[in-house]
Amino acid sequence: MSTNASPDARSEELHRKYIEERNKRISPDREAQYIDAQGDYSDFAKDPYTPEVAERDPVSEEVDVLVVGAGFGGMLTGMNLLKAGIDNFRILDMAGDFGGTWYWNRYPGVRCDIEAYIYLPRLEEVGTVPSERYVTGAEIFEHSKRFARHFGLYDHALLQTRVERMVWDDETLRWTVTTNRGDTIIARFITVSQGPLAIVKLPGIPGIRDFKGEVFHSARWDYEFTGGSADGGCSKLAGKSVGVIGTGATAVQIVPTIADDVEEMFVFQRTPSAVAARNNHATDVDWFKGQPAGWQAERADNFAETLNFSMPATDLLSDCWTDFFNRFKAEFERRKAAGEELDPHDIMQAVDYDKMDDVRAYIEQVIEDKETAEAAKPWYNFLCKRPLYSDDFLESFNKPNVHLVNTDGRGVERVTADGLVANGQEFPLDVIVFATGYEVGAPPHKVGEYEVEGRGGKTLDQKWNEGFRSIHGTKMSGFPNFQVVGQQEQGIANFNYTTVVEIQSAHAVGVIERCLKNGYEAIDFTRDGEDRWVQTIADTYIDRTHFYEECTPGFLNNEGNFKDKPTFIGGTYGPGPLAYRDVIAEWLEQDFERDTEVLGKA
Ligand code: NDP
Image: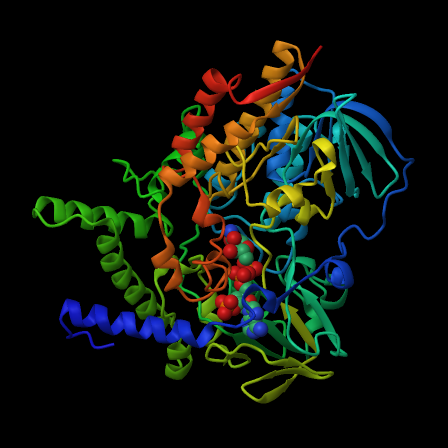
């Protein structure tokens, strides 16, 4: 790009280049280009970490609340139940322990690039001091287990257990839940927290079953084969040629961690990522311990406000994530002071071109080989894909054994018995890692692979096939005493997912408490209530269609088809997570009776 061009000419040139790059990547198969690791492909999702299924007799019991999912959503729901004095509940999960995504994702280098001080739930109560600003997955998994011990959640857990069916009975006003372990649980209330990163996605390329070497998805790393741990040291990869498919948030962590263990590594890139420096550092323990009570919640709120373009007066984090939003704020304030027009889309685009120029300059500065640096540059708007932060991914390409295979938008074409084919060339490999992500935003029953039958035998699938309708994204008419925790569509989204489940778990327990207090055996949520919320979403909706239609394809824009089928992003509550928290609290206070039908009193 010419740096001497006038601002308008530069914008036009970048816009043209972005559209050209996007068009190269539009696949006629859209999201059907992927295979979910379910059904015939469920072997890709098998648990390598707790391979032995602990023996136990089937459970037959009646509980006040069944919590499905033992990740952050379920953990916080369990904690809130106990704080509300409700202790007759079960937490159920397919995994062998608490932690959700942090149970499953143990690949070498796994970390969270959201600051630990806001991401790890309830640091102050649990007493965890994160060792670094952006901690390892192992540390988050440890915190999850400590959280479960601290709040006494293990006594409520049924692990390695998958729900098969949940059926509502209008006579008994109870849910009957059956599992793959022969359990029958009669539950008065149910909350489900399946998480957005639970269905493992494989590229639907020909020959996926043909490879004769070792092949696995990043979320099911085979340490038996590779040796080592999430810290690296995969010594059994010595002398091996490894292919990594993908350059998303996962791949940028794996590649640098195993680069020195392998003989050769080929990183197959379809779309370059916007990778900026993360600047991780050890926790200043004196600073951490000197924080006043309630600081974590305040900090997380500040992050949520900043990322919602709400421009709070102070940015408490000032980190890699908030940089873009601070640039927006600075430009907004500059234009305001200069009496210029304040069109937010216009400001955002101007800031975006500069931000992406800086990202591309950073890539050019870090990667020594000019051709590789050029190939690694992303050409799309900053928020088209999840921004990535790393202090060692780009540097990996300076090692002689790490090769970027730039497919210029075409992706890997085929898997053969011996390796992968890209750009018409076969790359012989010993190991293939699919760092190809998840089906983000799938409805909870699809993620959990269970059936939910509400009133009159109507399933959630049947209900949602008529279009997604809810109150607050979390409560559905025809599904009494049933709530979703972690719902983004018609709910809220945030790069710090902990904020979403903090808000929705507290609300779900608030609804349960209200029923118990009022002696309601069961409540259904009314269609009028749904109509009102659907209208609220329509009224507050921020139309991002133009932005996402022009974006390079990915899971945020339904692989380039946002117009016809907006992703969860298209339907979140416009004013953002903190306003949503106020609105649902007010609903519980004032409108609960209006939007619910009492089915029976105790
Ligand atoms: P992503 O969906 O972000 O990335 C998948 C990658 O696979 C993309 O680079 C994609 O290319 C590539 N791909 C898919 N099919 C092909 C093909 N046929 N040939 C070549 N490449 C292909 O998955 P991730 O697991 O990286 O991340 C998913 C989410 O997990 C993140 O968005 C984030 O929410 C979370 N995460 C968070 C982390 C954190 O630090 N907080 C760390 C890791 C994950 P293309 O871009 O062209 O589609």
